[in-house]
Image (cartoon, rainbow, N blue to C red; front, side):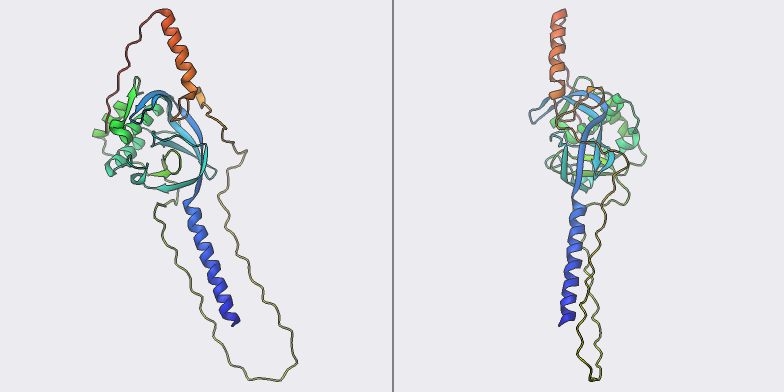
Amino acid sequence: MPNAGRTAQALSVVTALGLAAITSAQAHLVEDFGVRRGAPAHISLSTGFNGFVGAGIKNIHVDGVQMDAFCIDPFTMALRSSPGYRFVPLTKAPEAPFTLSASEATEISDLWAMFYNPGMKENKAAGLQLAIWEIVGGDDFSVIGKDYGASLMLAALRSYSGPGAGLIALTGPGQDYVVLTPPGQVDESTPTPRPHSTPTPTPHSTATPTPAAPSTPTPTSTSTPTSTPGPTRPPGPTPTPPQGPTPPPHNVPDGGSTFSLFAFAIMALLAINKIGYSVPALTRVRTRR
């Protein structure tokens, strides 16, 4: 039954292509190039971390496409490169127990709409990142010392009545991020099953047998499925992710890492001791859920 064989082969190809499309929709390569605009901040986490991090706008590439992002997971170290990221709603990131509630997701969306600008000043970008971390971390997160206006941004939420920004989260093995929703992008946390097309059987016609000389059967050619091209990288050389913690502009370390400022902190303490001043105890900024 040659027709039945071709039908089974066609179904196999359709199924394989459908599964490949679903898999590719759920797996995005995220490259983290660190904080591109921000400032160093001293934070403390309930998990035991206490030190300086880079707070501000992060420069990430998703499948080769550059995006501005803010970290919504201060409890996880950033990965320089990972293919295991998915787009999900803000209420499905970051990982438990710090998953955002609907009201917290709305607050982050409103903060972005109120204060984000691609060219915003370094201190303001740092303040916006700290305000987002305040919402995510609640009592498990605190700022020590300068908060770059984060508390004022959070206070401004009470009187804001405008529309929020259209945001979506990227969740994966490393830090989770929040970005503006790319055109056509949807939630990938629960893939929608793709319908399988059923080939229409070809009607068989009954022909009157006519004596004829034996003929050599003509081999049937099988068309090869055409692969769909992946995302095209923008023109120009592709930046290579750093092989170690690389400070972005103004020597701001990547969020979640203290290595870049460790030497700086030691030098600052030595200088303070040398001139004989006593350093007042750093006060903890009001923590807000």
